[in-house]
Length: 404
Image (cartoon, rainbow, N blue to C red):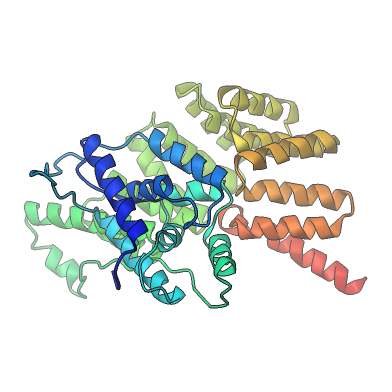
């Protein structure tokens, strides 16, 4: 940390420490620190009370992981170690502290840092409509500031890989090779979390050179290509994992998603159906299967799957949104809008729902509302998750405006 912590942050750390020890979890991670902040302070963090309560409930309900091998602290006030990812979060928070010109590290800096890191906290924040840029704008407005605070992920130091590494590796004994594989893969995981895709992929490649059947490195390699929406390159890695774990529904779903993005919707549907037979109560798989039915123009079947997903999980936001899209396509705009808005009540950061509202507005020739919804979809990372459609629609609107 660059400077001293605020009283609020010290209180939050004390809460996280108590929370950890009461559950015999002998570590503090980013989620515990966030829970300490949310449970202790309402006014200093620039989050609406209702959203704050939802985050608190979510954090309390987490199945906290027992970390095997963690040293058990001793003494009257035992020290609880902060995990590496939490240390990186604090380093990044100190960067935002400096950029905002604060003398102490505050909870707001922690939340900005969490919003810049790919982890469960970030995705839960986004479901409440809280992303880095919107939260930063809120902070700047509260402070009446106009300053440039760029999005930044913490840097991860990795092992030095020399030019002669392939030659040196030939002289590794079994233990040296095992240690190198574990080190490189651990670093690759951290790099992916902190948005350094290319270095992550490089380290996975080194792991696979030493152990071609390393399942986790194969999986992570697939993820690095999926993040870049290069499904052609992601698919071979996922299929190798699938050969090792043919009954794993998560792996099946990723393979199916790749085939879907590559245009083979019939095969994607079969893979999702197989995954669903292994896990019949999965609202996510039911929603995905319904989405493939849309692509195959099987609209009645799609609605059936979305209804089943909602029956299993009344808060399955994507199923409400996708059912709304089908109803819009079939000519029922009122019912469609109601379902899409319901989806956004459950997940305020659902970029696809904003895109669907934009399509509804375009059908009604309401270009201003369409543009507003498309910009919201863009804000919530539509391009990263779904492709260029929103950008193309915005360009079309701009062209129409220029020629009218």
